[in-house]
Length: 566
Image 1 (cartoon, rainbow, N blue to C red):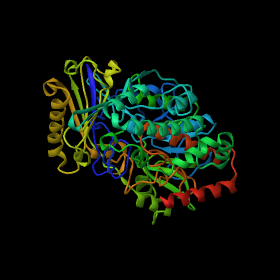
Image 2 (cartoon, rainbow, N blue to C red; image 1 turned 60 degrees about the horizontal axis):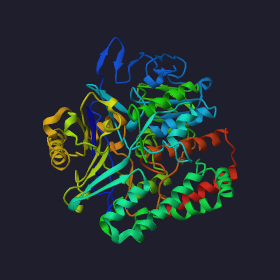
Image 3 (tube, rainbow, N blue to C red; image 1 turned 90 degrees about the horizontal axis):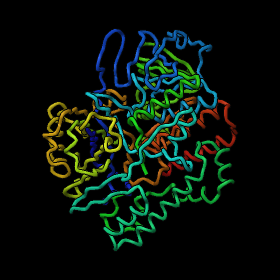
Image 4 (cartoon, helix red, strand yellow; image 1 turned 90 degrees about the vertical axis):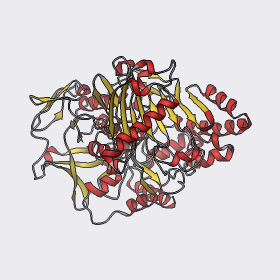
């Protein structure tokens, strides 16, 4: 049995990624969350595909060493207050949400000696990098394209985050990052081996050989500069100055390219519009194992994670963030608050302020919420897959103009090609977007998508289906508490590199943000970097790391000025 994950393009995206022939689109993928419902319910036990999780009617703070299975949840009656603040239970940091960005920030702080509490709305960790089980299938909630598992350099952020809390994951190398199926019968595989990938591109576009080599030469220059640096908070001046004196050339390289748009760099060297489209590893057991391992490591370091804890507001005292109130009335207090919610949810729902801070106004002026998706999870018979099928596919069959249309393109993932343990013998998964006529339209759109995939890639797909679930933006909003089901920010116009994206600090004293609506943006490795940066900045403000208040003030003002230019 195999498992397919399909995703669709977000329509009308206005950024300029490298991979698009027309510089006004990019795509993402997400999966169906309608199925994040308990398989069994009774005797105070919920089964969610993470073994069996015991939940108390009081506090569900995980303190056991088995959080990786979320299986020994024990009570704690002294970690919260019903109304009055009690400093004897003051945490160093509270993290709202257990997405990968939030968990990385939490674990990095815990390793430094901080006492951290993570508040998670749902009953398992991971957010959009979570998972669920149905009928023997283990489905990734979000992306299965995983970077950051290398054992070399400094960009292996997931490996580093896990190692910091004593965890290591077994991974399976994916020989092909993605297989593009494009108009006019163009088929391009992005091979894991760089030379193979370049050879394939040159064979398809021999007239662009020089431009291809020059462009990817620039990419390597940027990658090597990043990979040579110790990655911490770009808002912490002592770290920045230290890195500059150690690696001045690499720092100047990044300073030169950071304000630039990647699509503009590509178009400088490559003129053929069809070529502007453009090694990963898959964790054994599914993407959800990352969050489960981080949650286990967090608890092993003496910190806590509380499930079924729906944050309703951030508590302010004299303009400073000091705590979090849950929807059931419980209140938790800490020296610092880190929101792993989107910035729209953080400043539009969790904070009860009369007016947005200027920084947030600038952010919302420069960025909009990227549209969410329709999600389809299918289980199909294994024989429908041709031999040597790649794990990840991008499908745009007819016309480049369709790239900007709803359901115009399809992103497909088949993780069981790499890890057969995720399914019984034979299955697949789908994903898409539906904003209107929710109930009536989602099944209709799903059928059209399945028909396209059957015609383009897998003859006999419909008759091989043994399992199907469809989710919508409403599903994403419900289970992940993300405004409109969005999966991060999208530039309103042509972005000037990443300058316009906010970092981790906010205009509210004591409040930090982490995740895909912070620099450097969307993707598991990106939010991992965001988590590392956030933990470093918070640790400095807590006095755990070195700090220079005068330099801090100057640097933060300088970064704010740079963002105003974007």
